[in-house]
Image (tube, helix red, strand yellow):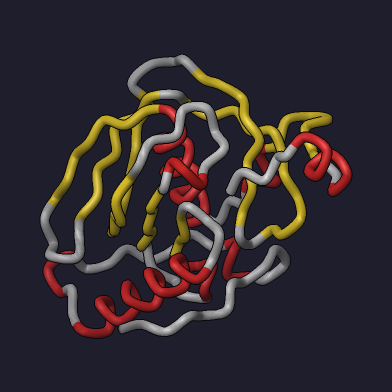
Length: 178
């Protein structure tokens, strides 16, 4: 069982660096322990995804898990715990949409971000198996958001002009999407 790690917040330098790839041919106990810590930290949080740099780990590892009953996005679907090592994605169409996003590393702020609606994601699981999936809707948004973290990008950099939500707006319009 992993341990809950401290979530790094905006301003921490690790959130601004491109993370190192994991050697897929050597997924050792150290990497598996990192994954367990990420899982435990995500389970302890209110988020739907977490990337390694958010807990101070400079590795290309992200985890997503979505319970549609707890998700206020219109196109949410259940996503079981998914460990993604060295994930990459490409858009499958030029269709995009704009929705409010939030981030564990940026508490109290929401912002409107434009993302591709449908992507193909390629990653390795903790067994070193290559996975290629087509995803859409909130799952595509979630993966793009977490992959941004692995490239040193925080969603604040992608918020549309005048797309920030204040605490008052969050409370009034229930913009508590994570």
